[in-house]
Structures are given as structure tokens and as C-alpha cells.
Length: 273
Image (cartoon, rainbow, N blue to C red; front, side, top):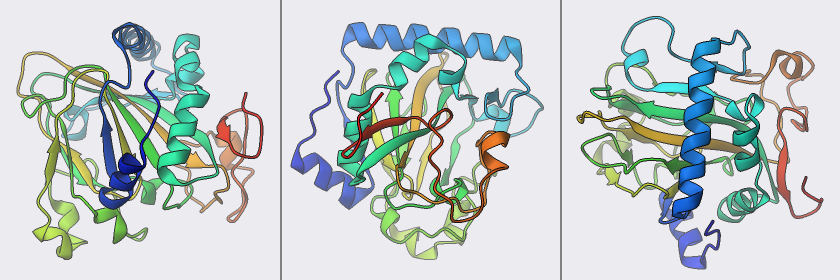
């Protein structure tokens, strides 16, 4: 895994709200990630878990179900995925790029756009989370080439500097640009597509507006994402995918530091697992 970040890359992330890292995974690592994620997704769909934090979105019908197949917290149910995700090197990259002193895993999710899948609407992630932080970040790993044809990511560069926590994410709504109603000042920002090769990673600020195009090919476009939370965040009252046992014991303002469900990947001040 190629984990070294330059000062120029970090500056680009903080300026634009995202950064594509080519060749994050080598060919052998990419094959391992593909195999682990494919198996975990298949098992999760077959099992149809009723757990709040280990779930998928393949029940019911509607626009959102045709955007992508999503499976959440595969690390909790599959040891092979856990070994890949709980990598201190990834946590250190997330800390370096976001400026956080330490990083916990909030959750992972597989994101698979099937052939003819709908576009993913422009949205901002962190307003939905149980914590709010300008240092929240995500690592999105391309398991297939992500192209204009099969649904690569799009960004509104710099939008993380003016996004707010009092707006909804708009994820799942039919209008791909509905978010602009909340941010009319963003209407003049040109959406930037980011095509990447399989094995690349894209770091995404939790406050940057992003979307993905439709899959207009005959093959799925697979990706795997990990959402990271700074180690010192406080609970804001929202559950999101927090397990019930964690959510039910938290009060607004409490530190979110559950090592079982939100493992520490990296900290400047403490040993990592």
C-alpha cells in the first residue's frame, strides 16, 4: 500500500475538499480487497441481517434502491474485511490529510453501482453523522475503474468551506442538484468529475458536496468506502449507524470513544491496536 502523502497533496485536499491518490493499492492488494468485499457483500445480502449497524439497502423499491447496492459495517461480520480496514497506515493517512490528532473508524460501506444504476445525488455527509467535525473524512477505494460512463464521483471543489450542519443531505432524492436549493451560492461552481483507475483511493471531506453519475455500462462499478471520525468528537444526538447499545448510553456532548464499535486506528498520543 502506497501511503506516503506529500505536503502538496495535503494542501490540495484542504483547498478542494477531496484528493485522488493513484495506485493506493498494488495489484495483489487490489485482488485481496476485491475478493474480501465481494464475499462479504454476498454473505450480507444472503443473510439479510436485522442488525441496525450491519445492513444493506436492497429491500423495497424506489429511486434510492436503484442508485447503488450498499452494505454497511462489513468489518464487523467478516474477518477478512476487518483485517483490511483496521490498518493503522490508513488511519494515519486520514489523520495527516484531515489534521486530526487521531482517527477512529465510524463505519465502512460497500457501494456498488449495478448496470443502469441511477446517479447519486449531490450531498454532504457529515451533517447526517452522530458527530460534527470539519476533520471528518472518508476514503473511497475504487475496486473497478471509475469512469464517466460507469458512475465516477463528482465534486463541487471548495464547497466544504461553506457547507453547514443545518441542511439535509438530499441523498436519495430524485433531483441530482436539489442540494443547490440550500446553497444557491454553489450554483456557479463547476462540478468536477474524478475518473480513477482500480486501486486508487479518494479522500473526501465530510463537508464537501459530492455525487456520482449513472452507470451506463453492462458491468457493475464497485467501490468500498471507510468513514473516519476524529478521536475527540462529541455526540450530537443523531444515531445514523451507531449501534443501539452505543446510541442509548450517549448524551449530547459526550465523547464518542467506544473501542468495540468505533475502533481507534491511529493516534499521535496512544498506541494503536
